[in-house]
Length: 79
Image (cartoon, rainbow, N blue to C red; front, side):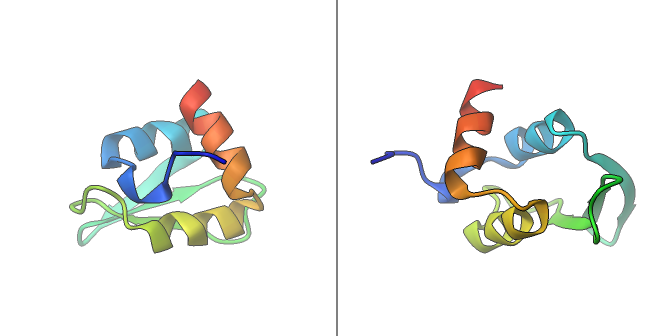
């Protein structure tokens, strides 16, 4: 059982993770950042003024990225 949670991920750390997996911030508008990658069907939208990142945002991004929580935590804590 993992003691790590999705609810305590800081905004700067999450941005680094998105860049680590190949996403790029393509535009910023109205307090939102939009990250894209060639194989994604839709952009990942992130509020640029809320830290830590809300858990439901990370869960939505994991669904778009086709990753499990375990895969995310393994990649996040080993980067």
